Image (cartoon, rainbow, N blue to C red; front, side, top):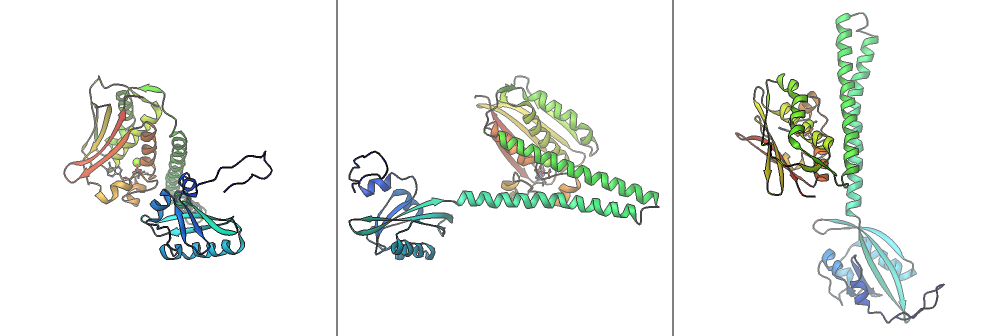
Length: 351
Ligand SMILES: Nc1ncnc2c1ncn2[C@@H]1O[C@H](COP(=O)(O)OP(=O)(O)O)[C@@H](O)[C@H]1O
Ligand SMILES: [Mg+2]
């Protein structure tokens, strides 16, 4: 192909090797002729679409109705068209196919380029599920609040015991909504900062002591004792003080909420290869293995009503996950009958 680019200073274009041009594309690209025969396909196309043999018709190798219909349309009118396709690959992909006509020496060829939209579409699904979840989580305490307000105006109006019961209920539901909003704000803050590396040097033991201090009264109401076992020579880690405090506070408060009554929650800090490992262990009913991979999803709870009745929002571990990832650390969860439940956070000491 030689030619000039319209409306630009004249340049001499080289004779282009179509295969080399396709191979230079970062996305799957194919060239077919007017009889839908594949002339060339690049490596990304082979990776995405599987075997593509030059000389074979694309209608036979990839009989995707939306694609074939778009191909016929561009063959007929020569106008570039864009079509969204569902590919039944493993895993299934959602792609946008851009099909343009190349008219060379009186013959029409088509260039097909695929753009993978799978992660964009998945993000859309996650976003709308998140909005639905937030709405639902806010709606239930709000419904209770409205019911209590109505009761105060009506049946509970002249009844002192009923009135104070309703007021207590309203306070509880309002606190639930506040917890949820606080956690949502926390989550959005840590998500926004996830890719900014921390720049302070943080000693973890004082943070663990601080979390114990904040939570020991709550632990005592369940007869739980919080024990911290940590050597004083545990090195500092690059981190953000308040964020790491939030991690330990969340994990210890979960251990108190979900651990066995009258048991011990053990928090350990130790030096490991390349970093520091903080473990939060509790006794009690283990988390079934099928739930483990999903625990850090927003609003994921093993037992929704139990979490709600304990004032949980289902956002704690999602916040923990983002903070740990900002610190380039890892979060591991182990839970089994007998051994109890252990959340371990590994934080690297090197920058
Ligand atoms: N130490 C633990 N023992 C048992 N289950 C736990 C523990 N920590 C977390 N979980 C489970 O993980 C879920 C999600 O935890 P989290 O995100 O902190 O939300 P929340 O505590 O607000 O419910 C909890 O609802 C609970 O089912
Ligand atoms: Mg929690």
